[in-house]
Image 1 (cartoon, rainbow, N blue to C red):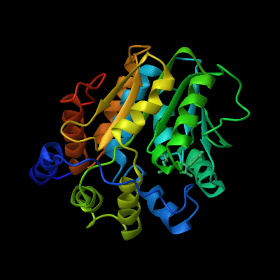
Image 2 (tube, protein in one colour):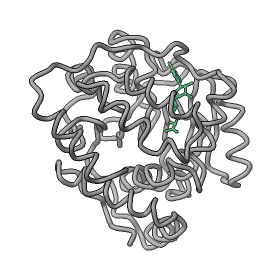
Image 3 (tube, protein in one colour):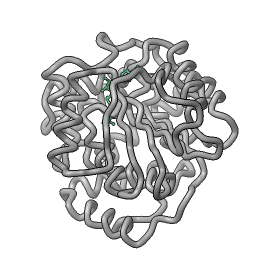
Image 4 (cartoon, rainbow, N blue to C red):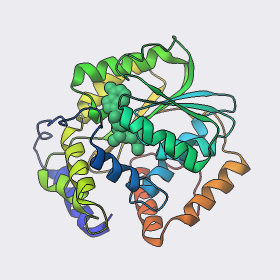
Length: 293
Ligand SMILES: C[S@@+](CC[C@H](N)C(=O)[O-])C[C@H]1O[C@@H](n2cnc3c(N)ncnc32)[C@H](O)[C@@H]1O
């Protein structure tokens, strides 16, 4: 992320009297395009363009997961993000749910490659969570998946299904893009690192931003989650929107040490992006549970 150029786009978003752009749902709602999935998976690996954001989410989620918990991840995709979250909570059990068989096959490979024992995957639809009993999860998470839903009816159904399967007082962390007001801002974020990311990934990123729900749509649907959840968005413009429940545990020494190791494994550029992203969200009231540097 490039600081000064990014600030100019954010100020434009903040000061513009426009409403968010019309929503452009993605062509394929579940991800089953081989080349696109390949690009997304590589971007999410330890040395990929998404590595800093994945570490950030994992640190936010760690205090929401207690030892012994059963955790559901909606739209786990290739599971790079899920595996990192699971590593920080080795005594919890995670289920990655996805509607795309192609993504589930990738997730299986990721789980094997990373040698994690506490993650399983299941095929299923997040809008119904059929087959999962009421109050059967201690925590529900989802990262960058809601924008794949067809419309606000599917979004409402998903939030209601989450409320149904989550135990009262359970942990919750849902993050996705928010719809912006200007195509130029969407292009900026999608293309900011186009020199080091595959063309397929840049196109997918741009499509995702166009398919994002607005803050208003997300917030209205999230009312179904109940009162234990707070909404956060990146300062100045809702590039990212997060719904998060209260902390359930203090990260222990092992979690902190592993997080610091993961941070040190990021490239210098990725470490810089991590700190910028953390400052951006802190400016809107969402601090990190602890800094890994
Ligand atoms: C952009 S990927 C995000 C993957 C992962 N959460 C991450 O952060 O890397 C979105 C995933 O949601 C899945 N998905 C879309 N609609 C779904 C649905 N209704 N139920 C379950 N999964 C769905 C897609 O197949 C895709 O794998």
